[in-house]
Amino acid sequence: MEEASGPEWRIHGLVGAALLINVVFLKISIDGPWDSETFTLGLIGSVSIALFYVSWYRLTFRRRGLIPWVDLWKEPSSSAKKVLLSSLIVLSMAWLSGNHLQQILPTPTGLVLSLIGFLMLTQSAYVLMSIGPLSDD
Image (cartoon, rainbow, N blue to C red):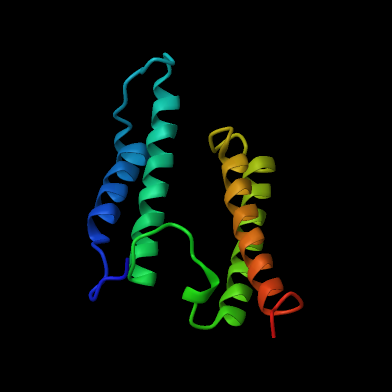
């Protein structure tokens, strides 16, 4: 699973960037089976976020996969605290986008940011608990 120089991550990043540029600026889309160009753009945006994640994972951990196991982290304690802080920032952005920026941003923006923020919060809580009170030591 682990490669000497790491798996290729640039292709995923470039395709994700191209898709995101289309979603934000070009807005080239089709109706699709759901008869909604905006839904198709949202789906393309979700795919671009997933490709960015795969690219980040491969670059960071130098291996293929999707789940950042705790044993892959160099400093789990400090990294988990950074992820916790980041999750609180993302959740704040979700609240802001769902309340005060609702007229400017697409309707599901707050929901998507909440999902991402809570997943980050869950990951950081898991790591902090597994190296703290629930550790084998």
